[in-house]
Image (cartoon, rainbow, N blue to C red; front, side):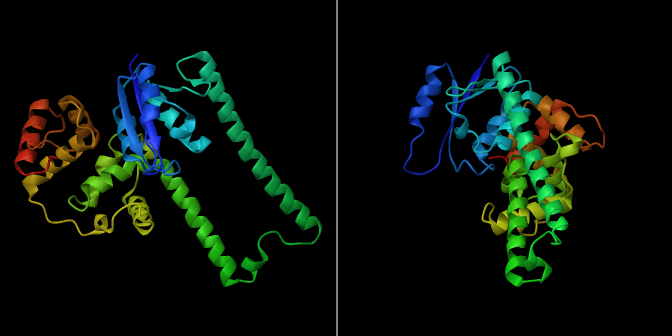
Length: 294
């Protein structure tokens, strides 16, 4: 069972060496290091690890907080691993999803998170009901009076909540947008983003543009991603798409690219719906000549 290590530090002054040594000591032949805030879910190194991890692999961290700072993020990552048939293990915490004990601990954590959300909902309902029985109207008085300061607080809270929800999915779309825009049209970026995602998690173009605008506003993405896409020759479009898929996962096989293109309903240069590795290889060679492959 291959062990894949992930080490994260937050500041320039820190070094991931102690974490890497601990991961190496338990048999991690492959270790990925990243410098990023634990609260930021849009981490490119972690995104690549989750994209490339295979069935039977185990993602290993020294402590849970090296991977996630919130229970919701931890459960989301583990859910992605389980969807690929992979496992998760923390050296200093009682979680190893390849063992019955570790799975039980994870179930307890998930139940605790749901219980906490239910308590918050019940407290809110009880508070509003109590206020009504005493003749008070629930809610913020400042909002009822249309006070600008109160309205601004609510707007900022909503924006923070929206960014928090975006952070939960950032690894699905941020690396693609950062790499492909503005060289590719939004329609093609959207199809590549949605390619590996289940239907219930796929994006619409309007939702993706709203998310990108929010990340640009907060400095998570450069403003250049919103620039107008340059006009591309018709016969250069397919090489650009194949290059983008290859760029997201340099180890992807020709057959896997075929599968991705078919899922995107992309037709071959001859207009067929079924792709062959030889066609993908030809397009990759053209993409390299055009300078589209890093």
